Image (cartoon, rainbow, N blue to C red; front, side, top):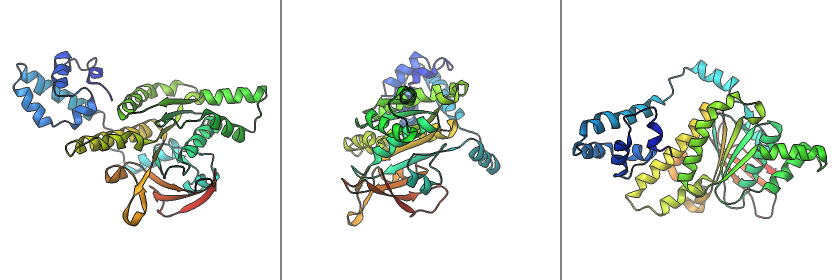
Amino acid sequence: MAPLKSLEAEHPVIDSNFQTFCASHGIFSVEEFLIHDLDELAGAAQQHPTCEKLKQQGITEVLSTIDSQHQPWLNGMELLDDVLHNKHVLSTGCEGIDLLLGGGLREGQVTELVGPSTSGKTQVCLLSAANVATKHMGTVVYLDTGNSFSPERIVHFVGDISNHAFDQAGQRVFQKVMNNILCHHVFDIFTMFNLLHQLEFSLPSQFQMQKGEQVRLLIVDSISSLITPILGNSGSQGIYHWRALMISAGYLLKKLAHEHNLAVLVTNHTVGGEKGIPKPALGQTWKSIPHVRLLLSGDQGNSTRTISVLRHSSMASGKSTRFTI
């Protein structure tokens, strides 16, 4: 999460005194500021010796800074032009999935892959990473939340994609591709926030990079592994905080996708629904976050998988296909 201190350089009123006041209320970051009861915070500021500076300047300045980050209104033609010229489609490397999605993962969108354990979600992520790094010559940022990232599997996919053996030319290809996949092991949602904010700050400079160095794909495998433990440790009072964190995470992923023309792929597990029918975890709050929701299913020990469209911004739900991986 972006610390309040990071705003001090451009906004001197958010000084150490204001930061100390916020810290006394358990607020250290922009996200924690947003989910706090601002009426309560303003009331506490009223009792402080520097009341007017805290209330009228500090609190107002943070809210104004956050509001200034909002994108301007765009008309339909501007949005269409952005889709046609800036939001490209990246092949996943899996023909069945690409055909279902009309080419693959679209930049500017968050695609969610839902499925039970052993359904093949991580394999699709690894294949997509290998394909984007190999064929689209782009950098892939891979956030691994469950120690499931397999460089050996990546090498296997790259070999299939590039048709290179482990000769001298093949070694150069493997080295370039592997260098283009940046993996971070992430085990709590706050670390993910920090990494995403670091990525957000570094992305504007990527347009000066050569094509092969630009970040094209962001993978979070899995988002539910980071969010579910917070829910499990929350009492009734903590549910609001959990939902706010989830919304903040979703907003940040969508912001990165749209503003920096990234394809974002996240995975989510399933839980028992009505009549025992599996449904995506994380509930209704998360449901509206992804632009595309796909359900992946298959039997353990069988390489054949079924993938179905649960939600898509430009096609009807219910379409499905089978593929092997």
